Length: 120
Image (cartoon, helix red, strand yellow):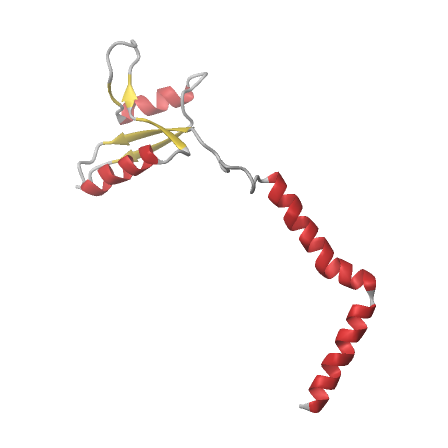
């Protein structure tokens, strides 16, 4: 055991005597943590995306699908679109046939869609 402790002491003294090695082992990672924290907004109140438009078509009557749609609407990261109103005065739920033409149109209101179908 004494030999192992002697070797550890020797290696630590050798390592900490080499200033560039200590800097690159500890200083650079700490600087990178700080830099990436500033870039990705760790100190901001609201970090992360919010208001991403996503269409949700729920053709299923399952309680799990209804619960998932409700959870998506409660999430601030998404702006859930479940209604279709081409004439601006009549609103109806989105159906699967509405998705592709709406996504391919120029100035599409959303780029992503979830489709919940009945299992049987």
